[in-house]
Image (cartoon, rainbow, N blue to C red; front, side, top):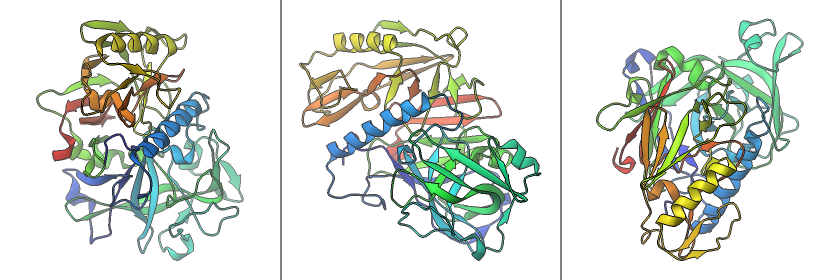
Length: 423
């Protein structure tokens, strides 16, 4: 299957024997699998690779537009998430699927009973069947730390709204969350804060039970695992759909060694991971990026996001990059099927001789090869996988074959060129 397929991954975990977190002080990893892999529960065998590209482009555009609304929580539509995580909640453990997303800051899942409910095709969690589920009170410290909570009797009620009108509302609660590592053991995280959705309206149907936030908010999964993983997680995204990738936590997530470069995380908001992108180079031509009025000298001018396929730049910056790439690629320009991808050439991906594009982050030069910068959208039509938007995003195509590590204690993101098909 083509690497240009929809870039949605599923973290597949199964329930094995539970072991204590103490056994995982050295960190742990979970397997992530491309959405379009034949192993995936979301696999649609009747879709062509180009239909999958179309779906990914559409999700990217929707997601970037919703980010651009500048609402603290109105950041994604539910089917815009690019990764699913299979995990377990409760006692006994109950398996659910959640969208795992660096652009979201809360964990929630649809719960029984709910009204209205969306059409979830996988089994729904019933908290009354779990012996470890408990709701949080409105007066609790955790309730007060979460933006937009309200009182429902003595309970703390969360509400999360999305840019397309989707929403989830319900009880902010604590429950045991279980993840399975690639070494066959399972790790329990007692007292994990989750939203138990009782009123849910979303714009999609499918196996997903809700969202697992990998962003920076106080009750995101990463923030809650905080000390147990040392504030570290990393991933390595393989460029082919049938090759497994990994999501790493703790010491297993450390990115180091030859070729590693690091750039600071800029504190600009409660959810996203903001970085400073100073310029791009195409061949020998360096393109300095402009800054908006909300940034000081361009600091924190781009977010790095696992949930967006394409890379988005402001209009002027994109135009300069497109011009430089067009100058370097000696192929016939053609009109592609999507107006958002405006630089396309007549070529197969295999025959494309693309220039190396270097992303110059503050303190970190990251070289992007064709697998990071071009996508085949039709038979013998390849397009630059960058486009323009007011909200600037370093997408997951640009992160392929890079080990990308987040260290929230040292406030930095690191990149290391890696063959993610052989990790």
